[in-house]
Length: 228
Ligand SMILES: NC(=O)c1ccc[n+]([C@@H]2O[C@H](COP(=O)([O-])OP(=O)(O)OC[C@H]3O[C@@H](n4cnc5c(N)ncnc54)[C@H](OP(=O)(O)O)[C@@H]3O)[C@@H](O)[C@H]2O)c1
Image (cartoon, rainbow, N blue to C red; front, side):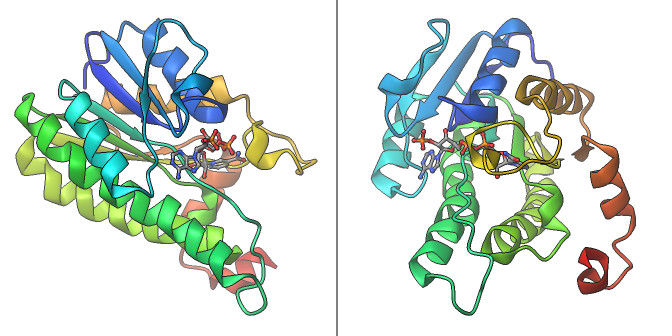
């Protein structure tokens, strides 16, 4: 996928990794970058095209897809982590919000934008997952595990429509989501750079760091033992 001249839509493009994606695409010659956000007033990059999009709201998704009829590259970045580490005692509403945002949000935005990308002659979808796609980690981990499967399925389903699909897998990134974490964290811009390199190369998966690569390579190990 050629980044130069692409028209990109990044969900959650107002802050964190999404903001880094917007900057990376613009710096690499994208023709237009829609920074999609629940509140478009929070998009601060003047080079970006701010657009309203709540990935859990069907009407909002439809409006955004109608407005962004020139998109060729979709980045499903928006997500929430409600830190529901207990699947038994955790708040069910929090668990539902994580699935509604991180899984159904990705699916619904993709379903709305695939016809747009196909009508523009094909393009690419990047799904931002996590190393926690492969480790048992509460509801958030479960959403990212499901996203891995969805991403793999979409890669096959969208190939005949000339749409490539890349999954991004990575450990901690230095954003609001991991503000409570004291372990080393990646610079969001470096993660965005690695992911965009992967899109440009047509990679199925981008494994950003050694920890993620080791976990991916250990998928034959009982996951509960792996985490211990
Ligand atoms: N941070 C990490 O350590 C880490 C590690 C691996 C993977 N990731 C993944 O990286 C991606 C970006 O996360 P981040 O670290 O940048 O998190 P973040 O700093 O918490 O930002 C989350 C973004 O998602 C948006 N968002 C949340 N719910 C939304 C909704 N319903 N509709 C539209 N946008 C919504 C937020 O918008 P508002 O400003 O409106 O809240 C914000 O732009 C996520 O997929 C995350 O799972 C993060």
